[in-house]
Amino acid sequence: MGLIFSQLHQTPSNSQERKSPLHLDSPLPSDSSQEKVFAVLADYLSPESPLPLDLAVESLLKLLPASGPDSEEIYRFGEDCFEIAEMSSYKTSAHSRLAQLLEALGLSSQFTWVTNENGRVWRFEPLRLSMHNSYKGPNASNPTHYINYNSFLAHLYSHRIFPTDPTYALWAMRAAFEDDRDSEPAELRSAWVLGAAQWILWNGQGLFQLVMEPALFDVTLETWPALRREQAWGVGRWYEGRGEGGLSLERWRFWRGGFGQVETGVGDGLGDGDADADGGNDGFSEECRVVAGRARELMEGFERNMRF
Figure 1 (tube, rainbow, N blue to C red):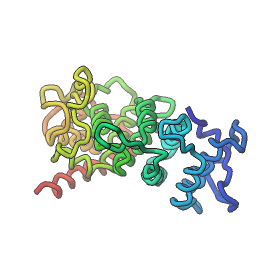
Figure 2 (figure 1 turned 90 degrees about the horizontal axis):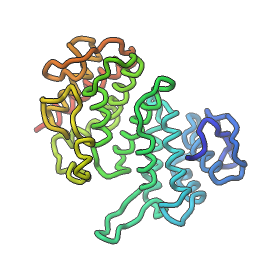
Figure 3 (figure 1 turned 30 degrees about the vertical axis):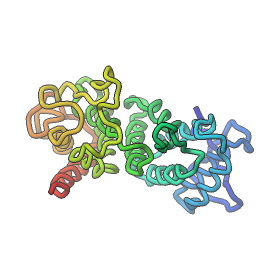
Figure 4 (figure 1 turned 135 degrees about the vertical axis):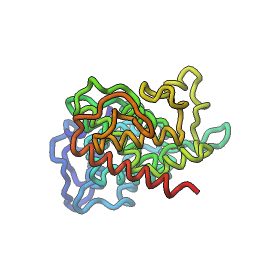
């Protein structure tokens, strides 16, 4: 695991003093490479006088090892990126800027390699491992981490950091609208829905393209090991008997209906879609209702304007 984000002491990465929201001391020596990497990230993400993208890329490539994309330092860099993302609100530009930075870094051989079998280029395999390691549901102590995590993932997939794969988006939707959450507190139920909404806000158009054109997938259900297929793209309790797993227009509409019910508080429960479903829908936060309404509007717009 990399340096804890809250421990970072803001150290300018060049001679020009820069403002940053990060002020706490780091336990690492000020001249350590990891401290310097964090300083560049802090400067780049600073809301005031941010470090330009090209300078951030140049600085990071000098600090990170050229020994290969599977080095320990590259792995720690990915861990740190996810830590920063989970601490940064989805309402800011931090996730978009981090994704832009990673997209630019991915052009370097320090982050990519070519497979011998088919010449395919793979980027950020250690980052993909960090993504998997960071996957967990919201917890009562800090449910916003889950929301911000999904926002960051949606930005990463929007920027094509990873091959086109709907798995994480599908998991977020299933967790919000197909799994039984009736016994959970309202704060957690709101976090599940807000996490799912991030995929519509930041990658909804791309996700709907996959609904309509499954051939666009780089990763398909058949690429998953047989024993894990149901776990990967299977349906949750409230969707059982309504359709198959994976992405479909019917399932898309089911999720859209779930957002609509959270927004209005009208209906028999989450995941209603075009038909009734069980479960409650009360107790969602005002933020959750507003964002759910935005997600519903976007989903309706994609369906209305992207089908020919």
